[in-house]
Length: 379
Ligand code: GMT
Image (cartoon, rainbow, N blue to C red):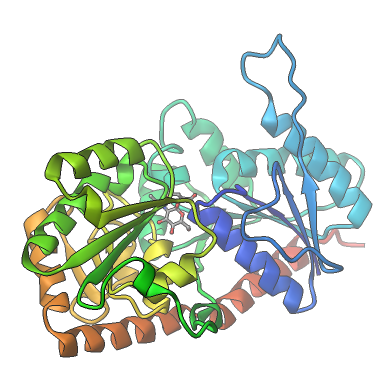
């Protein structure tokens, strides 16, 4: 099949999922075309089966806002015609599903039928999409898609609650390539960051308010009062600077390392003992799954789709949003005893295997085939 993928090419989970999906589809013999404004960060494998087409938006001083949707929909039409793309999979509804609909309509004028599959990722529904300024267009584009998927059951229920949806929503969970998270390097260089007796706690995110970064630091503050520990903060975003200030205020700046965005997540997770994800809302929590795939137990909030990923008392523990005491208590329960830690590490890895890429990607293939069959014009 020739598949077009539209996504955000940045470090966010939706872009990561879209990129890993495209790479795996190409390995399974499909021809994949990424169409976005920058080469996706995890896409280093361009080749005969993986292509990247850049969407450029020329600056024009009259425009206060440059019209990205317009440029994207034009590019989609051109690429579909040039490369004979058969199905278009858009990740994150805003504005991708909307631009895809416009492209589909333009192509229809020329007798070309292009099925659209839209994957809802989370904030496109729960935070941004349901805002009254966007809601009408988001509802319209979801309803006009030929197939709609959501990354968790929780997100499906949120979508049905927040929007007037006429389409079926298929839950196709996020996934992980377990093999990639089984380190092939002999030494992950843990010694560079912590001494043998220190436990390593990690948080990875885009440092937005929804991630509740101060909670990560406060939980770590409680942990390091009881046992020797270091905190690895990975990612960039508006909450990073205030987080650095909070560490200084609490006097723990020498125990916290801020990495910024990293392409070496597997290396960082390889030496981590615990992952913290206290988010206000999280449709899935891909970062937690990545941690678990590396054998790292998770201390998280119980919001959104996280309970579908992190299992209480097995791969980690879940607490109410903002319950720092409970999160700290649970973290210490895992970290204080080596046998318990080893048990949680093993169980986390086992739980992650339920989301292995080889089980999930065929579900997308089946959806593409069904949509293609449904949308093919009768001759
Ligand atoms: O977490 C974010 O704010 C970024 C967003 C994205 O576009 O990458 O993440 C959402 O999609 C991920 C991939 O499906 C999910 O794992 C995250 O849980 C989801 N974030 C939220 O719902 C807050």
